[in-house]
Image (cartoon, rainbow, N blue to C red; front, side, top):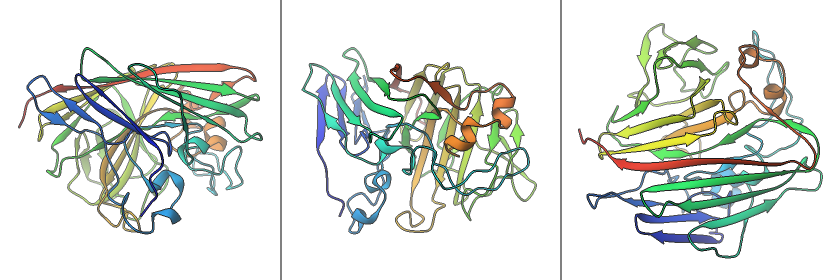
Length: 339
């Protein structure tokens, strides 16, 4: 069983939110809708309390909810592929998947009325000095407001991301991803997993009209998919808003973020695809991740000339030594039709 680190919880008129020190991740969170129903939209990995968890990377030990990724992704040995540059596993800045802060314990700050604050100091050799995070329930409604502060130690160019992950209903197609058809989607330029069914390295408008490896097409706006698969799909030039309608449980999640900070969103469709431990073909979740990144390919590819940057979509942010970067975003929940 993975050892539980420090946890803080906060009750407000419209629910209860918990935050864990490991990764600064949002833990189980309940929202109380106006009709009295309690909904828990965030994902919690099914292996979190199973034996053997201590051997896992920090990010996987108690995978759950939502957390920031600085930098987003991780470098790896990837050959150049068509227009995509190659990279090596020798890291530019970080060996941890999705950054140091995603894999280590944060420190909770002194209690403040109506919010939970925490911070993490990065290693002295890292160009990022520290992160500060604050989670504030909206006292008027079923919503959480987030603030992330990045303190920069040295000049650097890094991909960034936020990592909200949502629990999916078991009924096929019962959650609808509500993103406009004017948005262009791009499939990953290589294999995501042995089970993946999406044709690799394609752009499509609308984003949801995905070509599969067998030449057929699939509307991926409704999840979970019928197939056991693992996929990622990048949505380019997003407006900074999106919503997810869970028709099986009758609620909608609305996300809003600064589109100048995060011009894309990455859809992580974890659809019972990965068969290796600890996934074991049972992980069912949707990551809806605002990013300034080229997929999760890491700093080398994201900071280089790549097919997204050539289209005018930023895939990395340039930071200056001494900079204090602040970004804010919101996740809200509301009642919706039950189908």
